[in-house]
Length: 117
Length: 109
Image (tube, rainbow over all chains, first blue to last red):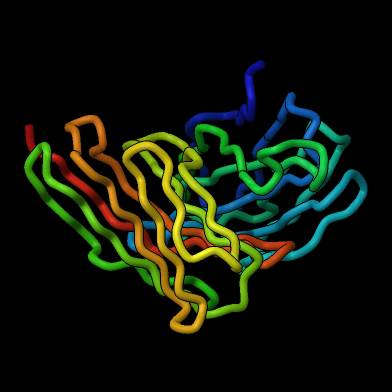
């Protein structure tokens, strides 16, 4: 199993450009999450999807949109990138309660390092 | 912000010593978890303690939880150079996780 995969690993954008960050998991997890990590700020939740077909805002959703394409895939889109969105983006997934002994644990991808100039 | 705070921000110890890091949080929780992040990598789950538990052990890890003070601590005993990483607490409120700001641990061989 690959676990949680993210593409791309690195990206440089100019202000105003758009892009989509891709995330996929092969663990049959119901819940998926997008976080951003900034120096000294820990991880902050952007959006999450508790199950296929649903998405909800997290702590810092402004400037982002998400799509839960199917159970495996959860994408994050920046419509008009801004320098304040320079960050490392992590995708994570979590099993449905009752389906696994580790259902409270989040599994993280390796991250996408995004720079907006 | 719902984020928790971790203390200290950075910690440097000699191999073999114990490392203690603390986490304070703001919300009511279902459970609290600790994660580890090696430089340039994603986070890896270490241990979970439920809101009705006060202490939990896993190998060289010991976690305590005081819900009245909204605080937790992580103790790593007999540290190794390979324990060098950042450590984050995360509070699980049911739908969302709130991560602390992290403690950067350096273990000197």
